[in-house]
Amino acid sequence: MGSFFASLLGSAGLKALVDAFAGPVESIFHDYIQGRISKEQLQEKLQEAILAAFSQVEAQYLDSITKTYTAFIQVAAQNPAMVKAWSVVLYSQLFVLFWHQFCIPAIVALGVVDKYPKAALLISTSAPRLTARGWDELCEASKDIPTIGLQFSVHESTDEARDALIPFKGKMSLREIVVAGEGWYDLTGRNPFFNYCAHDGNETDADADRIARLFNPSVFCATVSVVCERSEGLPATNQHQRDLATSFASRLVQRGFDVRVFDPAGQDTIGGGCGQLWFVQQWMKDHPDQVRPSIGHGMPEVHAPAA
Image 1 (cartoon, one colour):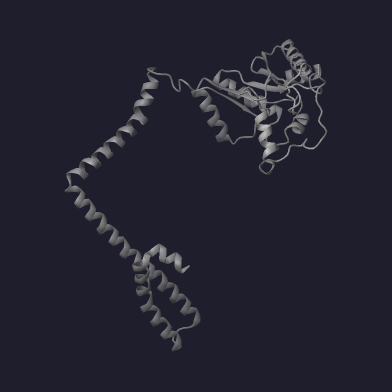
Image 2 (cartoon, helix red, strand yellow; image 1 turned 90 degrees about the vertical axis):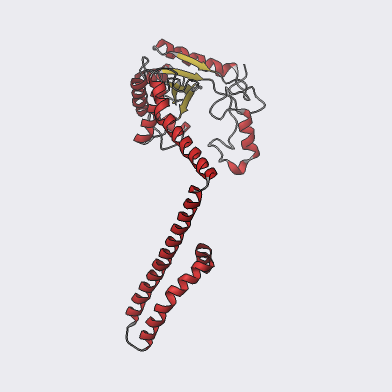
C-alpha cells in the first residue's frame, strides 16, 4: 500500500500528505490519552483528519497544475512556431470532423458516389438469438449496403434434429428463423437463404414438405450443401454425397424454391465451409489443447460408400 501511494503521489506529494495529517492526529491522540474523547470519537476524528489531509493535498496539486498550465499557455502564446503548430492541429481536426459529419453524407445523399461501393458480404449464421439492438444494427447495415446477403444454417427439417446437429442452446428455432428472415426481406427487398446439408437421414419428401411448410419459396432461396468426408484418406466428396444433395435440391425445386447446390470439393479451397477446410481440421489435430473435441470425436468413422 505504501509503494502504491508513493508512486501515485511522488515523494513530495507523500510528504505533503504526511505534514497535513500529522498535526491533527497528534492533537486527536493527545485528547484520547487524556480521556477527553471516547474510542468511537477517536475513530470518527481520525477519519475526518484523513479526509481533510487528502483534500488539502488535492487543492495544492490543483493549484500547482493550474499555475503550470497557465505558464505553458503564456509561453506558447508568445512563440510564433507554437502558435502556428496549434493552429494547424486545430483547423485540420475541425476539417476532418466537418468532412465526415457533413460533407460525406451530403455527397452520398446527392448521388455523387455510391455508399460503400466495394462492400460485399454474405452473413452465413447458425442464427443465435440476438438482442433487439443487435438485430436492428444488422438490419440497418443490410439496408444501407445492398450487397449484404443473409443465410441461415438450417441443415435439418425439424428442431429436434437440428438441436442434435447444432447443440447450441441460444439459437433461434426454425419458426423464429422464418420470422427473422421474412422481416429482413420486408426491410431490404432481398431474398434470404437457408442452407441445408443433405444426408441419408434427411433428404426425403417428408423433409422437403416440412421445409416447404415453414419457409415461403417467394421469400427464401435455398442452398443445399454436399457433405464432405472428414478423413484425409478419403475424397473430399463422392458421388453418393453429391447425389443426395442434388436429389434434395430437386425436391425443393418441385416445391417452388430457387435452389443452388454448394459443393465444397477440394478441402483446401476458399469454397469450403462450416469447418470443412482440410487445413483447419489439420490445425485442430496439431493443437488439441486449444480446441474442444466435437460430439463425434473418438467414434467409428462412418462415410458414404465409394461410387
